[in-house]
Image: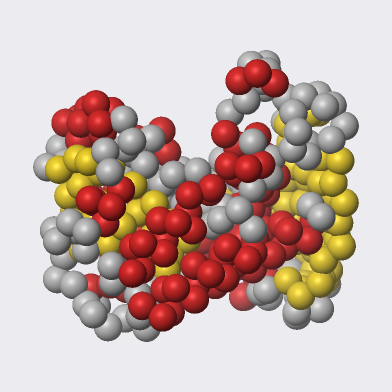
Length: 324
């Protein structure tokens, strides 16, 4: 089914929707945000007033079954993604779900199957795929600027937050809600980008530890993997280090491409002829480029598919293997 305009509802209008995603639904052509839901009604009402949304709810089922809502963006923590996705699919509406896609691969597969059975699309909010910055890296790879790709390395580590206390941990550090620790929340973006750039990963080996013991979840993960294309990869993610580092390096037979997942530092192409750099301004609403592709997919006969649930499933499978 194609829509003339996609009328969106949001389940969980929390911090991530204030700037990163929520306003984009109003700014994209043929798209409109018509309803929001939060368990605390006063907070939902306040959000709706500030963002000029006509309807608010404190009950997710009411939003899902609202006849004026065509598609639903699930912006809650991962622990409730499966429940809401199954309900939205049963209502016959497209699903756009936050990342990580779910608590584990099994839940991802249930979500995919439910949407297939209902005949509705499932989109996952790995929004970096649609941003010009990462499309440039893909362009460089496709143009063979570094020849044949040999391997990719990822080094991501950061300082521990000063306000982390065992008695009041943020949900991202509670595995029963988030699926894991900061690796699940942050590294999933990098793994998804590597899937986008280099194709699916076919083999994974990894280990995890809780070295600093600030919380129950793992605080360091190391992994090696091989893409189905034959490209090798390895990564280290540590969340209790002395400084913040974010670096990905794709090495080929004729050069290398260096870029970060979360920073704004330039993309650097290094070959025997020297270096070239490209800098991109971060979108104000980082979800907007991906939402544009989703709305296009829902309103036209375009064959260009945006980042879908299948991609999210591969990412969650990799995370399961690395953190076993």
